[in-house]
Structure formats: C-alpha cells, structure tokens
Image 1 (tube, rainbow, N blue to C red):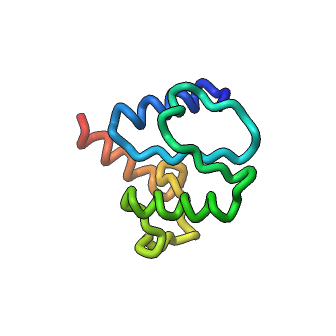
Image 2 (image 1 turned 90 degrees about the vertical axis):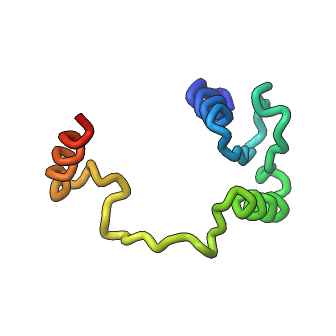
Length: 96
C-alpha cells in the first residue's frame, strides 16, 4: 500500500469504473483512497478471505470456472516473442 504505483493503479481503476478487490496479505496501513472499500484480509482470516475473494471475482464477472485455457507454451505478452515481431509491425502500420 505504500507504493505510489499502487496508488496510481487504484485511482486509474476507479476512474475507469473497474472493480477493486484489495487484498491485505501482511499487516500494513490502508491508504485513504481504499478506506471506503472492504479490504479482504488474508493475513489473519485466510480461509474466509479466499471465500470473499472468489465471491468478489464472480460478482465482477471473473468466474474462474468460466476462465479460458491458456497455452502455456506461448508467452503472456506477444511482443516478447521473436516469432511474432512481424505482427507488431503489421499492427502498428494499421494504427497510423
């Protein structure tokens, strides 16, 4: 919670109307920007915290039962793959 990047991500998510599910994994102070949201405390109430997290994910439309299968042989960011660098050139030329 002390990170300025964390603060920036929280405020950006709020501006976009995204669901925010703050997880507390170690004792820490909570920033004022999160004080109006219930924190899921995994540091003391682990089982209950995970249940709340799963419910929150489902409510946000991120039900893990309906998640897509990821091909583990592919990199998560296509830009990092040498074999797909030509795709980046094609895409950037279309965006101009």
